[in-house]
Length: 393
Image 1 (cartoon, rainbow, N blue to C red):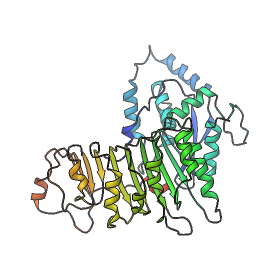
Image 2 (cartoon, helix red, strand yellow):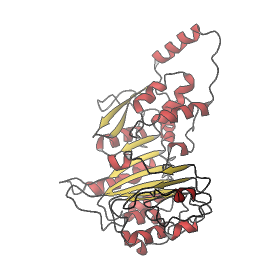
Image 3 (cartoon, rainbow, N blue to C red):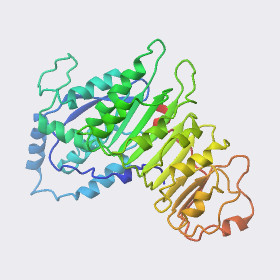
């Protein structure tokens, strides 16, 4: 059960109205980052002409498609082999028939990335409160600014935001620059469900940034957070950073149910300087590099999940002997650990068990497998697939 799977969408079918997008060009920028550049925000006359020709050839109206069925089909083809959205294919699916048009166009804006200047300017033209509707490009790039109804429909479709607070060689003030933009970008997407945040070597956010995330009029109350700490280009490590703890305790507007911590090790023991975590998590994943054997990890996991012992259903942690597992036996459905040694036998509700072999391989003795929970439907070793946050950030 992958964390934050696309099947967990909430409210993707926000509007059944036509978004007015017939063509949307997708450019590949900086390797794996994608920037959406609007070429035609208004209805394409050619599309309507082709539709009328097809209607004349058919004998009577075509049967209506149930919208849920269309979404199930599109969800199946949404990601490519590297688990990235197939933007180019979605533009083609929008032309299959009228029933596919709105769902496919909606999914084009399901996930957006703001990680460089070009992406920021593109979305600023679309969603900033200061943007004015225009049918002609003021930038010379052919980008159009939609009128207010179209703009509101587009922003309501955005559920996942990839954002990067980064630091580059020779640009000492760039971190503050991108930090100041962070709450602004968040306010563009009031229906945001998941934030994937990458941070380069930043100890903590400024108080004014936290205040804006809590008080901004359109700041979203996200439910899923992935956070990855990174080194900067000088090789400086984020070992002094307490930013992850700051985010999950100080941003009171967020009501997190899904949390992933990954990237490079930060100040793992600094959670003792923060108040209790207020979130009741349904899923928690620990995926910080080279940290499994560190003694602070067990205490950190206990701290983060202290208020989630009655709600956790999916858990990914290094050790199967962590006391948390015995506390969540009534609710746990998916578990990933690094070894089978010490795995509790009374996980009666467990549906999925994934073991990442470290020093100990999986046992050859059949007794181990016969003692697994009878209702288990998925058991095995994880197959590695590139993680989008890991690769792009």
